[in-house]
Image (cartoon, rainbow over all chains, first blue to last red; front, top):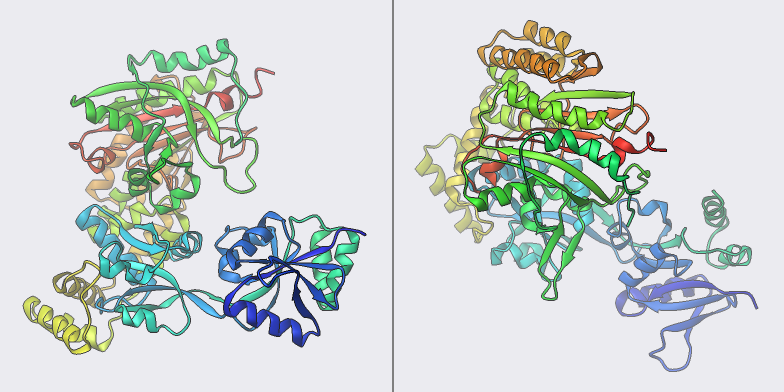
Length: 241
Length: 373
């Protein structure tokens, strides 16, 4: 038997449930092999496909590295891999779940700051006054760097943050944050506000294909089980370029 | 990691000789440099070009992306008022995506940095002359010299009576074309204040601070983020002042655009600048340039190969005065054989005393590349 097409799906949480619902609406059922804790699965109804269950972050990495052919993960996680991710991963279809915005948030107490242009001015004043740069706490260092550069903001520093980013300004370890938010309530509870032009990315779960993976012709045609005709044609055109 | 081919010893000797003749102490600064310092000086955008290393405790440092900061730190540690340093060693930069062989990630760099000697056209010519001769030592016949001057832009803005805070930001954005055009657009418009901001901006300072604190109390806001009511009140007052008078007039904008379009033979560009503004600051800067060009000629630089470009600056550089790079027609424009200039402001930012500083670096593998084969 030829090598199967590898599809990576989220291994836990709400994203996993939503993925299963999406697959079921397409006529497939996810069956984990062996015990319920298995990390591989099969798609009942699609024999040529092997499913790998991974965390959403690992799926983004595996698509980037070419370890899997297809995967479902957040656009934010893919874009955070690299500025030129589009050369290595093709986003095929937004799936309508896992929605969240990556935003720039500033202290609500800064009543004079509403836009990135305000941030630029404040950052410049801060550098001139203190000799230090305004600090932005985030786990999205690449998205932040690209967005701030596009808005011409240079007088800032990124403070890498592994978790509880929204608490950084109150704790005094940063002045601004770039973080993911769905309703904004966590930001409000932490005395932060989203800048008017501070939405970096409206992210949601996407079906995506790796352009760096090795695709046999059997795997290319096997993708038809999941993809629409147009999506498959678009993917093959990209792979053959 | 992409490395470069070694340069044969005789070729390296020839390239090194003009720098060695500058009577500078050979210095060997650490390969590993503090990451925070580098990012504070060059900005967050530099991070993508740095090789970051971590020790077991997770503390971060970076491999030196060039020698300027490393040598400057050595100089200030020594405590001397002035010093001349020569270096020769490897530097490390992550190549941008899609970069060619002309951008190895580990490369040999030789150069000289001079601190605390009086800034003069002659001092600039000494450094540029040595770099030019080193670049010529590889035997390439297709070299050109690109000149720029960050301080000349500042002098022109000052001659046009542009407000100092606006001028300072424009000068610092010179090496970043996109940011510069954003700033120019923004500075030509009125600053907009919403009703609440306008009300506060109209109050005396103490009353404005009280009004801001009242808003915080009313909305139950924690004053996080390190900016107090005083700073917010000050910024609103400054914004209101700017709103009454646009930060750049249409006439100023037009002259700035014309200045930034100038590029060509140094003499021609300088006489064009002279017709743009008669201000004292610009005239003084132009006089320095006359002396500099004379010095370059004396140092053996072929000025028919030189262009002066008013937009020329470096995004990650520390240069705040005259700067240059030596290019070859057979190498990409972003792969200079040699580069350097004046960076008097760096010393203060490194926490030292204010001190003049000028230097240059040469990339032997680029100087030699084709001629040796």
